[in-house]
Amino acid sequence: MLDAFRNVFRIPELRRRLLFTAGLLIVFRFGCHIPVPGVDGQALARFFEQARGTLFGLADLFAGGALSQLAVFGLGIMPYISASIIFQLLTAVVPSLERLAKEGEAGRRKIQQYTRYSTIPICLLQAFMISRWVENPEAFGAVIVANPGWQFRIMAVITLTAGTVFVMWLGEQITDHGIGNGISLIITANIISRMPVAFLRAVELLRLGQIKPFVLLFLLMVTVAMTAGVVILTQAQRRIPVQHAKRIVGRKVYSQQSSYIPLRVNHAGMIPVIFAAAILMFPGTITQFSNSEVLKDIGAFLSPGTWLYNSLYVLLIIFFCYFYTAITFNPVTIADNMKKYGSFIPGIRPGKPTSDYFYRVMNRITIAGAVGLAFVAIIPTIISSGFRIDYLVASFCGGTGTIIIVGVVLDTVRQVESQLLMRHYDGFMKKVKLRGRR
Image 1 (tube, helix red, strand yellow):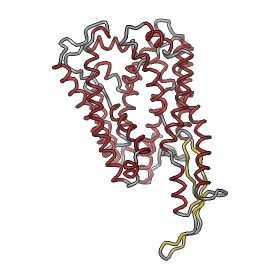
Image 2 (tube, rainbow, N blue to C red; image 1 turned 90 degrees about the vertical axis):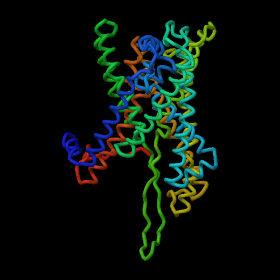
Image 3 (cartoon, one colour; image 1 turned 90 degrees about the horizontal axis):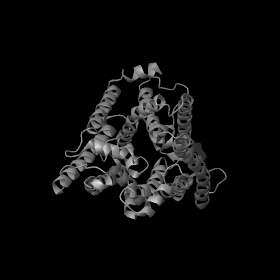
Image 4 (cartoon, rainbow, N blue to C red; image 1 turned 180 degrees about the vertical axis):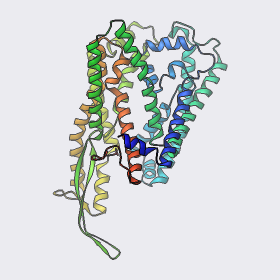
């Protein structure tokens, strides 16, 4: 392992890419601590301390604490992620976008350009709503904006929108000139930035006697076990054997060959967890703006830790796993491409029987991935309510953050290892090579 790290810095191009990525991530984290002018950051931070179980707490986690300070990068990269998910879903239902996606690199660049343009109105809408929200002292019990009005709203909207566009540009620069997917690395950096806060809070709870040493040791063991479980869940795949017919290319005759098609057990990734959490946290968010006792009772009944919240959370994750897989995985297209190139699954006839076979296999492995994903996602809520500890401390025992961190780290290590092996250096794992996620 140490030799692999030394080899990374022996390659000039790889060293330059790593330093470039680290430099842009430092610039991004610096912008997460520059507040929008005219905002009382301390009063806003106190509100977010009480709003960890709402959409504000989820958005602040992905923004790396920038939203709780209403920093320049307060919206983070989430508007771009929202636009990307929307276009990914539209690609499966809109014929024109589906044709663009099949045109290769040029079509993907066109869709990416549409995604960038769609990010702007999402930013404008979210920034305007946030600017109006922080002007309301009744929502916080304190004055957040000293001089409310249209001057502050326009300034906040322009600042937050420009910040998100700049973050989007940083992510694309990391993708083109750095290591790995820049957008994923930015989200991962935000989540990792909350780890020191969680560690200090755990130490404080231990000092105050609100948490026992053996409980802290148990949390550490659960964190290690959940990380290993997420690695297995992320890398797990079902390999479908495929036979390729004899081909004649020019004067060469290629004999019958065999390979496999990997089907990921967790095909949807972390998207079902994000969707399920956003839906269930919506009632708790509404109660922050309402004085209705009925809405407050509903929000309390659906608060994290209750049996109803946990049950609905698991069911929604399983539902969105199947929903997202059904939209993004098209067995008919795979079967048609195999038939076109003379490939077939042993024992399965080409055409519709092949697509039905892919459909059955994907349904069976998706239930395993969905249950595993739901188990990992619900663990922090169970630990937080069972041991009566802060959710931020328990959030790194599993949940969305762990799934994102593990996936991005695996992809980054795989890319660095491929660069090392291409230049005849040993990778991070000499005997076992990391399989990349499709």
